[in-house]
Structures are given as structure tokens and as C-alpha cells.
Image (cartoon, rainbow, N blue to C red; front, side, top):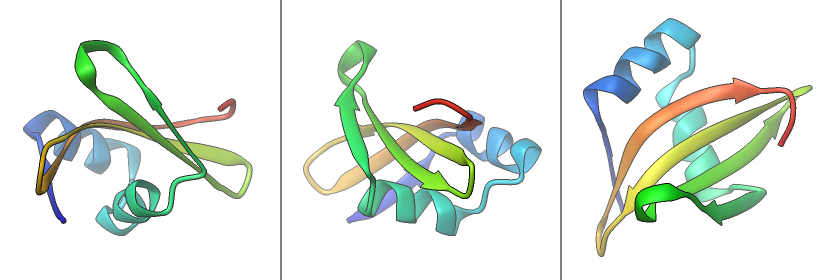
Length: 74
């Protein structure tokens, strides 16, 4: 599956020091996935004591990452 990043997501990844590898692993091997607003999905994976949240839109053969961020609570 193809993973595409919005300009906003790429900017947030640089600012928050989140790698593409971490995002791809979170999307493909998430511990939890749930629905969000506007038909988007949230993928969640724990790294150490923090969780990485990836907000994305899925279509037939493509995932578009909208934004990503670290959080202490799932």
C-alpha cells in the first residue's frame, strides 16, 4: 500500500522528530485503530512511554497521512 504525506504532516514530522519509518510501522502494525472525524482513521502505537498517533485517510490503494503527534495517553 502506498503511503502519502500531506505538507502539514511532513512539517509536523520534522518539527516533532518523527521518522517515516515510525509512521509506516504505526500504520501497518498499530495497536489500536479507530474512526475519527471526516471519515478519517487514527492509528496508535506505543514507543517506550509515549504513543504515536497517526491521523490518516484510507482509500483503495493509498493511505494519506494528515498529521502525526506524540501523546502520553492513548
